[in-house]
Length: 446
View (tube, rainbow, N blue to C red):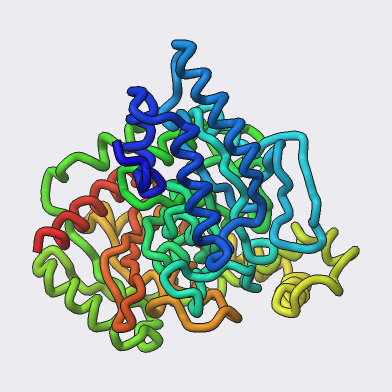
């Protein structure tokens, strides 16, 4: 077998080849490390990478398989971890000089789940400062003069650049969907509470989600299967039955899906080429897509999101504010200052809006639609590295805790990727993956 392009293998294919002894984990990890050496000086996706440690994990995985013992679904497959998840064997610096050299003695729950599935933790990917909006060093792998998005910039860029087949990110506003769109990969923000967050940097209990990146939908479903679970240390996770996400995602829907095309009230801010691309997609779907306007509460949701995020972030980064505010970026200092001034009544009122908002969307899905189709961002990745782009096209769905998925279906006039954001009902993650597969196949067939 040709081993020169192993770094472009999907995680699903790689896991099967390792399981069958066609390739070894060492060969796959060596290929990914070679790709990192080739491209990361330009892209700068990794915050921490110890090649020898990665290879030691791969050798241990190969020895385990050769011993005849049972192996997990990701055995020997490398995964990148956003540098806000604790790793017992690597530093976790949260994108800030305040946490430089920070180490822990434990893994975040999701990292432990990945190890249990047999994954090799390749390294830590770049995050923006405390997963906020102040950019990190990472560049877009398609054009280094453009942003990769944020805050999960390194994870999206590493997957898109062929350095690793899977990576973890997070989303509190638009930190998974936006970089997935800008970098041209699949990105999933699952239902709130579906994946436990213990050991992940906490900004906002109400809004924080674990995010997933992959180059194929099958890989995204495979990764999701390993991470769904209950951890009593995350008060928003709960026991639930195991769902075969890969099997459901691969199924043909019982009926062709119906899409609600939601332009949002910020449609005027969408770039002209993106508006044209979405219009063509809606026309291509014909009677399977209906334009839908969201009124009332949806229009106020951005302000509710801002109030909750700034108040909770200010509380959770209180120590950093007290001991190191001078070393925080001006943007983060301003956010924390605003958060510290949020009146309690405004914060509690914003929290109280979420159940009714989610209930309204649940009725919408129950009555007619399989997914909402909407922009992931105003357009392709902006030029320059001083901004990670506008997260406003994602925040409504984050606030409501609904699963959202960026599907790399289109390109802008400049040739850069342009993702389609699909949104489903809470706890409808498997159905959303199935709908996305149908949509991708429909577009590819034309």
